[in-house]
Image (tube, rainbow over all chains, first blue to last red; front, top):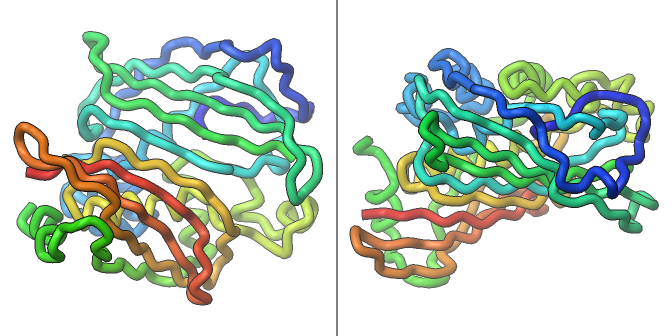
Length: 140
Length: 144
């Protein structure tokens, strides 16, 4: 769930739709890939060697969006999507940014909920697209 | 990457609707949740601290949804190799708790020829030891 900070107010205003984070340069480290693969129990050889990242590695990239805050303990992750031009590899220097794509209210099993759609984009140093992410975050 | 995908997937007669081989994971442990919290940077205490989990109405800690998605990521790497994956999307539909044993399963949804091989859309899911689907997904892969 990239892009969220821990704070206490549960409501995110629709006025914040479209707001973006700063661009952050992420240097993908071999050790971080290995640690992630080990935690998951992912036995893919190239991942255990720390050369190629597992597909969900972008979840490690967490960039706050100014003004988008809520109580972390009240958050559920509804869904996630990643799209790739190519795998993320050790040594990649990725220019990343998150954006609040949408906010809406919904009645669910657990009562009134606020749904946030957070997008994440990772580009190479020359601006070429590498991956994108889209998180559905439920604040109850 | 001799042990991968292309081989594993072509082994199962790639036609639409073909079931993919399953990948069964070891039981989820609390230690794994702590390790995943550290590795992923998701420090939400509902995954690692029972007291916090109960405060928000849960019976105890629940696994990160993203851990089950990571299992599907591993499944895709195992099926087709990490270089083949173009998209993986999931919905988290049931909670996962320590002790749960998750299995990744899937089937071929579409197969289309591409310039250098073929593009497949796979329907994927993770189910628990009670055969409940906990995470539903779809992936696009390109294989030679």
